Image (cartoon, rainbow over all chains, first blue to last red; front, side):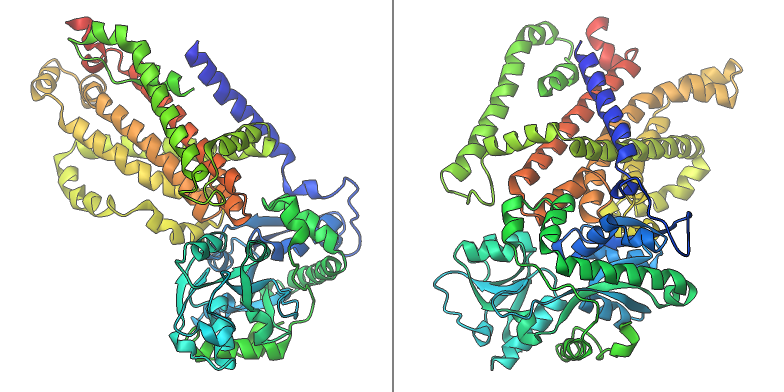
Length: 329
Length: 280
């Protein structure tokens, strides 16, 4: 009896799993009538893209839903890596044709000798102080009033030697503080509010959707580090190997066109962004309705890129400042 | 479910205590249930009393409700299926490789000596240390999970098989030789039965390790399965949903352990460790 229930449960689970696999393929994004036209009529080229399941990647999901990639003759295979750790190796090894990552991560990889290059923009700061997708939060009643007060304090970032500490050091220095004296510790974004509440850190660098939550719970934003670095700062984008751009020039051009279309569409349809985020993350509806959306735009801002790259070199994240021409499309 | 597993998988009753333990069985189950209830009550109280903020550790009832809600979702069962597929395939590959190599190496003194240092060198390397390699080779696909699972589970089985083969009774082996049994026949009738209990222990250990590695790979790399769902829940701020998934992995662990004990009991029904109650 007992044995049977166990076996039946296992069988049921496997049948469910198998049947569900059939309907869960990436093709389910289309709505039956394939609007195939133009160059690669009929046959779609499969293209795998590594993304991180966060708000920033909404445009590619929207673009896929809208058929922008199909229109270019591409069949998107969106693969989600839980963290940035699998993204660059995934592109280098060829598991992903393209992938999403923040600018510093790609600069670091390039700095270490991997020949990578961006093919499309991803997300940019909103450019509004206090109303951005990322910021440094302090608990109520903190003595920290502005960026320069972070000197000598412990600040959490999700990854050391990345875009968080680089931009924070830069704004601390801009504000007249000593960037070298800020102590950075690694705390994942979801855990940062707890670390702040337990006084494990004096300030926490948090991104949306956790930033709105932290503020709603009484935290204060002392620095919108992206905006303060540059109101035009691009934060992340889609990249690939420089070799892929050469050997698969047509594929790259198609991907870039579809991606740019997706970015424009996402920028014009914020409600659809909030809706689609619910399909690939577990962010609940109330949070999605309230969170601040980033700016999605096609062109990279070269000046802001240079500012970021120079800062990264200055604070030791990179050995030398990158050349925008080598990395940007 | 958990009481099921306990009933079929409880420790093998030793000779003298046999009758008493049969009579005590309901009590044992009750104690087990009381343990679980006590654990859940403690969990419920910690956030309710404010020892840990409710936002970061939701009370047990909230998590159980989330888990029950998960049971109704196809997406949940897809993830369970993905994790179980990786677990099963990884385990089967590991067992097949380990059994084959174990018997080959174990039955040759020369090979045993030649491989000993290599085995001892490779065995302690934690499977998670191979994550960067797995990502480079396979990306965020199931193959990454398989590589880690196979690596971790392989050693569990191999070492047991080597011990098992070394445990063969020389008199029995020589007797078989005297009776004209060839090498294959001796492996089939003398070596294999001796090694089987060891092998089964190895398989049971490997089954648990394989599950741990399957979840870890999904959690860290993002290959499909329950582990990835846990990471997603965490990065989406769905805290009770995250704990619900963690509970689900625990339940799967209990199920796997119960299943393995059941298989062990069936395969070794002839062996004294299982049969002891009948012999004396």
